[in-house]
Amino acid sequence: MFRKLIILLLAIGMYAAWKFEVPNVSAPTSVQVKSTEVAEEQERATEAPRFTSQYTGHDWYLLEKNGDRSLELIDGDGSKRGHYQFETGSVYEGLVVGETTRQQVEQIGFDKVKSYNKGLKRYLIPDDPSFHVYAIADDYVTFFFDQHDEDKLKAVLTVNRDVEESSDGYYGDVSEDNLVANEQLMRMLMNWDRQKFGLSALADYEPLLPVVRAHSENMARNNFFSHTDPEAATRSNGWTRPESLTPLPARTWRWGR
Image: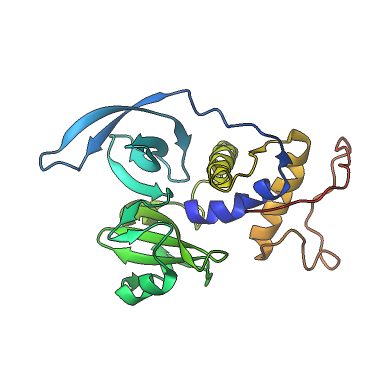
């Protein structure tokens, strides 16, 4: 699931090397996207970078309209089944990214979702102040909030209920190909956000990837989110440091703004 993979993969950004390098997203992929913006449904051919999603049979496409970028979740028939908007000023149901606060969202009275039912299993949604999930129309809608900026709305994720409920497990597809695609997508989104605050872009540092991936898996497995494992001294997570990994010189790390 996209929101959980965001948490799972944020460690990539925490430990990434500081290089001013803009991700290459110029290679287009043609996709037929069915537009619902007009009364009579039409099909439009769209050139857009494609990223494998955690929902089998669906991909994320990076689209740009009137200067605003967003991600659309498209199925094999070209139908839109989800949407991720993150640009400051973009609007969902009258809520404005970068302006609307958590309190204002909660006052609306949307139907809050605390778990997903998938087949015979029920998956609880973590009680995390950084996001809330609601059932709105035919979608599950996740509102992300910036706890470092007055709890303002940071991004909005919508996924069709049928798509979410038919995905495997809580995370959906966590195959190697899917994780790599999400790492690339996450770094790109982080760099765009960093650019807003005049910060240099993050770039992949290949020798660190085994370390950060292992740390991400450890956080997901043991339910914590931190640079350090609070119980590292009392448990073994089955990971050993690669012999080929060259130690990095000490330096000061900054995260976010």
